[in-house]
Amino acid sequence: MKRFKNLAIPYLVWLILLVVVPLLVMFVLTFMSTNGTDLTTAIFSIDSYKRMLDPSIYKALWNSLYVAGITVIICILLGYPVAYFISFSHLKNKKLFLLLLILPMWSNSMLRIVSWLRLLSTEGLAALNLVGTDAAVIFVTVTTYLPFMIFPIYTVLEKLDRSLLEASADLGVPSFKTFFKVTVPLSLSGVSSGVLMVFLPAATGFAISQTIGQGKVRLIGNLLQSVFEKNNYNFGSLLSIFVSVMILALVAAFSLFGKRREN
Amino acid sequence: MLEKNSWKGKVIGALKAIFVALVFSLMYIPIFIIIYQSFNKTANSISPLAWGGFTLKNYVEIFTNRQLYTSILDSLLVSLWTTFIATVAGLFSSIGINALNRKARKAMDTLNNIPMLNSEIVTGISLMIIFSLLKPIFPQIFGFTSMFLAHVFFTIPYVILMVLPKLEQQDESLFEAAQDLGCSPAKALFKVIIPSLSTAILMGALIAFTLSIDDFVISFYTQGNGFSNFSNYVYSSYTKKNFSAGSYAFNALLTFVTLAIVLFISLKTSKKERKAK
Image (cartoon, rainbow over all chains, first blue to last red; front, side, top):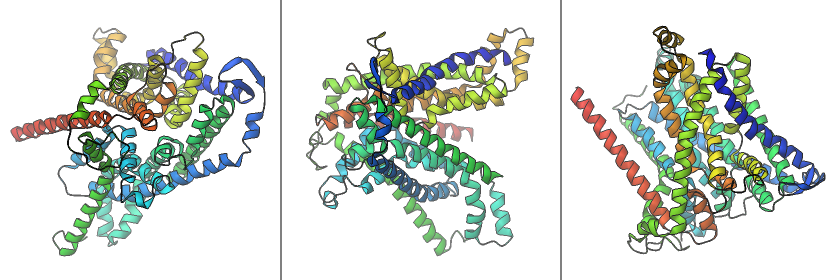
């Protein structure tokens, strides 16, 4: 099938046009002061870099890491046991559970967020003043991304060789010890892909923090959005590159950690 | 191991079931609210979730609120075209990538991963920048074209993710056998290789459609000229406080239809299984 090599060329061109070129354009924009993307009136400026000293950026960044980090931890604490109980249950219809897990995702995510907001601002619950707090943002983020944690863990647990657990039991190891010494280490690959699938969208989203946070919870996504709303493409580009570099560094560190553990 | 029938085992089993039910309810509460609101007379207001009486008016609104049904049709238009084009493009790109030598392959894999790993907001912004640079040449680019191209861009990697691993497991000798029997390479590709990938292709198409129809952030940056999608209609109408409860009705309707399809299929397969026995 080696002769079909050329079929990769259009996609390569497409990726260069839509991944590499925008990155270069953004990089150029960071050194300029422009009106939107109008390059005819551009002048050289390092204002964008000066603005990177603004502490509010790092506050938003910290908020993002905090909200996404807590979200991930809660998703593991809720998702791992669910995946584990379903995978190790004696139920005949495990597929039904998978279906039940997918079904909520077929409802529009924006509308689900709006529904939470309506519920949280209903009398009784409204007295708790949850709307506009970190806690509410984290809660809604958890419910939105929880399936992305349960899925990969469940898949790995299903593939786990049950005879290993029996062997451990036969050797007289108590079952909770088997769980922590055998099951958990062998399912870490599922946990780590779940962590990435939850952390990245949770840290960079802006819809939940905007609606549930009512503008009081400012994450890096909200900052980016407001900068582009004000038509500042120069600082916005720098901030975008900054966010991308952070993400790529995080993913690289994560996969490096995973490789080291495998060895 | 605990005895299955001991009272201790039973209690633990019940606790497990309660835990699973609680976690699932977290994901289902919004769905129930959507269905509840779809029949609620006062769902349109900004007022809390109070029950204002039963109505089907919200369902009528799907067909009468122009902004709402335009956004639904726009969503469908973009997602159906995206699914079709991204699946075809992803399939042929996978075949191309599969044929590359190891070094080129690795570079391609890295590039292909970027749209999946990068945050949606940065993807949306960088596409918006490219489209606004193209605007002087194509004044009408914002709207269907920009949103469609953006959706194709972020869904192709997922199609490749589904198809490429299956292609790697493919037995090369099948392809050679077809050629020995007189097929041209292209014919062997269409008659032997592609049919054997059908499950992976279908999965890829399904993921592409699901991601496309639900997308908010990337569409937020690539909408324009009055062309938007359902997620963005919900967001902007909710912020502007002219939100239509028809949105709940539309979403509830979709839930009912998918539930009916799922039930129908599972009933049919269980009947088949019973017959097989």
